[in-house]
Amino acid sequence: MTVPRVELVVVGDELLSGRIADSNSAFVSRRLAGLGLVPSRVVRVQDDGAAIEREVGLAASRSGLVLVMGGLGPTPDDRTLEAVAGLVGRELVERRSILRRVEARFCGRGMKMPKLARRQALVPKGARLLHNPVGMVPGMALEFQGSLIVLLPGVPAELEAIVIRGLEELLRKRFRVRPAATARIRTFGLPEATIASRARSLLGRHPGVSPAFYPLTSGVDVVLQAHRRSDLEPVRDSLVRILGNSVYEVGDRTMEQVLGELLRGRRLVVASAESCTGGRIGDRLTSVPGSSEYFAGGLVVYSNQAKVRRLGVKPETLNRYGAVSAQTVREMSRNVRRLFGCDVGIAVSGIAGPGGATKDKPVGLVYVGVSVEAGLRTRKHLFSGSRMTVKERAAMAAMDLCRLVLMGRGRGR
Image 1: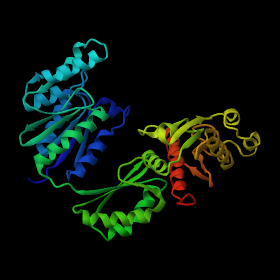
Image 2 (image 1 turned 90 degrees about the vertical axis):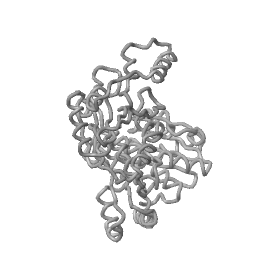
Image 3 (image 1 turned 90 degrees about the horizontal axis):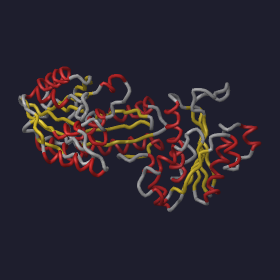
Image 4 (image 1 turned 135 degrees about the vertical axis):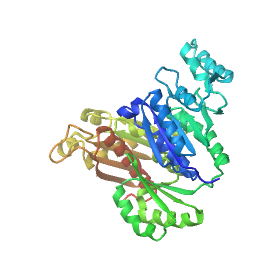
């Protein structure tokens, strides 16, 4: 069978209004691309039955595979199921196996199942179900006029579990596609334009390898794709060398996973001292299972008073250089390491905005520091974006400097 045209239909008023970001279509697109199924169109539609039926019908008339995401819940504004069932001419039937799971979920919480929750057991007659190991509503696959329509819940954790644990295998068998060879290079500290510029000459010599650049709050991901892995791997390795210290992962690990494995492998323990990030470093490090092996703890010392009393930063340092300075983060990183009696100290202080800036210290100015027994490194950054973006990038910068120090590369990028 030839590779089908693929379209995504994303349902939800909250996505159109901007109240919630659409992470699902990005995730699904990446997973499909890994199978050699690249979506040609993404449509977002409101929670309206007629609109959903119209858009899914149009997509099915053009494409061999249509994925519909969202609108499968138990509330009255979840209209996807009825709309698609009407389109394909299938009645909705109650599946006892699903209903028992829903009832068991409420019983386990000591709650009586509300009547609305029963809607989660409805499926179009004849649909193939895709197990949902995280939630209650399964994924559903329907044949319609030569197209395959797949319905997925909008909750990201549920959608991702269904895609990885069931849908991908179904698509491999249904379309007999040959997965493309892909490689993901994760970077921090270089803008997208700089990465693309450095990569241009290399990629120009390898037309069989196609690149995609994904700027994120946490850095820039470069995804390479080719028909053959033998074509892909030399380009991947060359690009990693070109991008140098900015590459923190070739694969899917996050910065906190990479740093955690470095610490565990070297049998080192780290502690954090945070000002502008408000505990974000500690939160990310402890999001990794088993992080108690290498994370001792942290202090959030937001005020100057807390920096002095809790962490032992010298008042004269704050008076002379200010809280947002290389001198202050040096003391913060060194003192938190000593306070917790561990091997590594990470510190960060900055101006997340929108207020608090001065002529010499603008919004987005961040200093990070890392202290180890052999010495201490600091680095200055100037980030743009919202308050939350600055906080996220500051936490990334601190973890990245720690990664480089542990790898013996802390002096430059």
